[in-house]
Image (cartoon, rainbow, N blue to C red; front, side, top):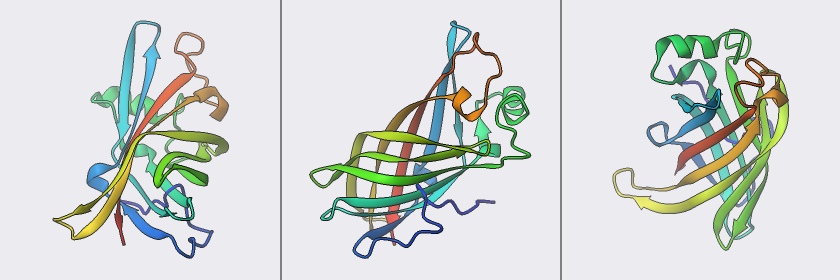
Length: 186
């Protein structure tokens, strides 16, 4: 069962007056992570359930996003590893079932989003993160009969900033985030 995610994240704040509203497309929205494993190989995984809302106004060069990530939906391709990541050494999913990203600023180049600044809440702690656009585009989806906007975004965080210190220093602190997101205009 999917939970509503408010994209980088809109629960308490009103949407922008002239902004177009978008809801994340679950079939085209994923948060991936990668981390170097003891200097040997890169470990990758993703969260299968990501939901939210986005609003942005190309003319005014403003936007808001509210996104929720179901931390229990972690998927590395290894059931045992997924269970370890859900537990007390990493995500403490029983106590912190969701992570949330709430935007504080959208940055544009022309009418395209180039970066989104915001706050990431993970393990009950909130810290700023900037998501840099690798690409961003909008198109008319013929199947849905609506505009779809989205792109690929990247960020690097230090997991220890959120209190995740298991395995340090053998497992590096740096975690690369890759976010593929598409939103359907409402």
